[in-house]
Image (cartoon, rainbow over all chains, first blue to last red; front, side):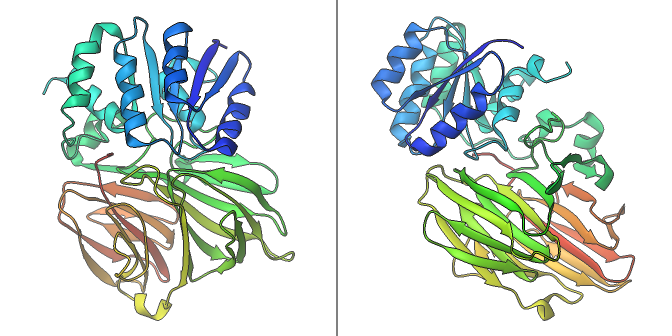
Length: 105
Length: 292
């Protein structure tokens, strides 16, 4: 299984921790929680992140600014606007970005 | 519009895209010049060419993803949890259609949801709901429940009875705006209003019949005798229609459907149906085909 580093950017702590638990339950996948826009931007610029996941509770401005920030990075990062808040859709959202990770492929 | 640009717009509409410095100028323009997606294209990335040509998609009951957790058996029309099928990701704003059976006295413990309009329709038995907003309720056959999960909500759902299964449909619809204030509602529907006709059970308007959600979607249910016909007019130009046969069989615009089949069609302004067996029960969902 490919290693993945996923940044979970949002405000609802229960949901962020749920998403983190689901992600880290897959071998090789890591999830880092970020709740502050400025800190999240710095992290994205500094570390080899594979996916930025937008969780709930962000303002429209925060979502727009962080998506805009991705455009100026020198390495590609996948973006997921997450819907659902739990296990139902998360893995499918990741597999849609990285189809090679689908089990059995 | 060339295919590459179309795919970028389609995936952008679903909230998933890849960004890189090479495409930075283009992506910056995409963000600065937000335009609505073109109608009909939102589903194109997941459908085969013959489906696109016919503007329809058929989901046979037996083609659904199946999960058996012992206490829960679930048939997934669209990709969900460990079921992944890139050709079954959504139909317009309809993202989840789960056909669940929960064992006696068992259920889903406390778990979170956000940014989804979650609709539950019991088909048999009773479902007990509790949530972090303080709502505590039982929903039964004939009821409909909605949760706008928005910024986040925790809830549990249990089979109220210890002597029978509970069967229900759980339907998730993408909201038309993210991070709304969470809300809960449930109503009991008058089934007499849906004999050989469609009864509206959900809409975008709090003042309209049924429950309401944050999305341009209208749900209807109908119970039809064999041979009974119905015409349905799409409520908003550009919306598609997804039909789920709860029981019985029906001919929809020439397509024969059987129990638990699903059929989506778009590019139409109205649709004709005829029940082809007794006691046919249909859920009809009129859905925004654009993912905002």
